[in-house]
Length: 276
Length: 256
Ligand SMILES: Nc1ncnc2c1ncn2[C@@H]1O[C@H](COP(=O)(O)OP(=O)(O)OP(=O)(O)O)[C@@H](O)[C@H]1O
Ligand SMILES: [Mg+2]
Image 1 (cartoon, rainbow over the protein chains, first blue to last red):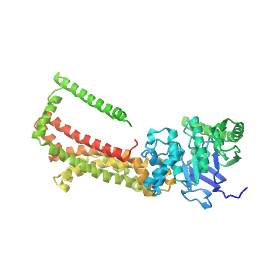
Image 2 (cartoon, protein in one colour):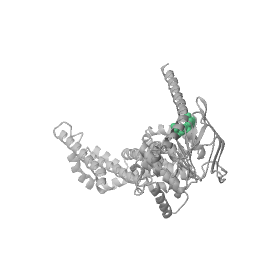
Image 3 (cartoon, rainbow over the protein chains, first blue to last red):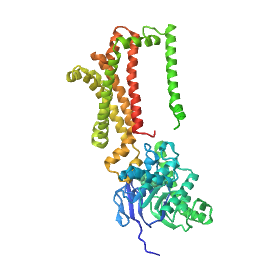
Image 4 (cartoon, rainbow over the protein chains, first blue to last red):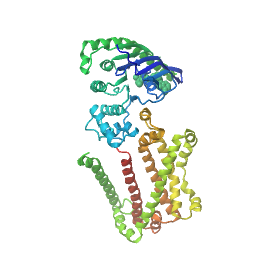
């Protein structure tokens, strides 16, 4: 095996929040590496600290312990090598599709003709040709998420960081967009880190999956997904796929049920307080 | 995007609006003719229409209209520039915001127009007195709506900007400002209404030019159809402003 240095190193990240009920440890000592061209997913139940980790890696959230480095360089604040795609809808409603996608190029000071041409290329890539002049309000949720994706890809980040980009979409759209992501990742050899709570999505797309525990968010296990590449969404019907899903689900079930109990306990507590 | 679509989107509501207006006017006309509304309080719409010719020819309506319109335009320009700037200032500086926000809201409900003698002393009996009273009374909604719009920008849009490493001024111009524009325009329109009411009121009070003075004169002559016809011209000023701001808004912030 050739000795390749990891492109992204996450070392002993701890992030605490001060809340009304005291200190909440959202991310507790998470470490992992990502290799160039690799597709890594981070999976965990809702509220386990995934978005917190995402914001720390993207340099949007400070005040943490540990170290993030990209190509050996420590990250402080937003980094040009990291492109982020957010959980919520994040297109600019006042810009057309093409102007949304060209946004990072405009910020970089690229000339209009050049950036329009380049933006077109990325619009093609996510399959939105013909919609260049439309505004986000004229598009479906899935299409808008693809606009966000094209916009981030247009900045040509070394590492693509995605926080549940398909969470708000239905299962069919999710699978088809998964195909799109796989194809893009294979075409561009794009190093990708996907944060998700969706098991099928994680197994469908990833080379490795990091399973997080529920509160505090620690690394529970890292699973290699040895499914053949190139892949597409048809893989979800294979036996190996089912085995991986089952294996990760048994890890995740324990954590998800802890989260559920926690929620119930909180409901009982607040309900009790309300009644008295 | 087709022409047919545009007609359906804008044409039909427009025609419907006009028909409703005509229907209401017809009903009022009927009620007056049947003696259910006293014609010495509300003149017949037909009489008002008939009096247009008279007030246009005899009462110098065009220069008066231009005067009120000009005052409103000046006040609105000052309002937009100063109000939006103050809104931005309040948004950027938390201490200033916390210290003054409630005061700004309180001023919004103060009847500043009653301070017209003070303005007369400062600006004399001129259009500037009128413009300044209108400007000051209409400032709060512009400031508050600008502030609300900027503060209400979705966090994720700001995060997108930060992740692309925008400078603070780029963040303002490329994200916060366009995101806040719909709110800012609501503020400007509200401010314009405040301003116009004050302009006409002060013209009336200090008996200085414009449509307000004409309304006053006609009312004193007990020329009711003429009074209402003059009020129609006041409404025309506000219609022109509304159409104008809508155009500007659509140009500045397409896509909605
Ligand atoms: N700014 C903050 N202040 C206080 N607590 C916070 C803050 N941000 C997040 N938290 C808490 O940290 C924990 C982890 O939140 P986070 O958003 O990272 O979860 P998540 O795994 O992304 O969940 P989901 O799958 O629902 O998006 C939650 O308990 C949340 O309440
Ligand atoms: Mg999240």
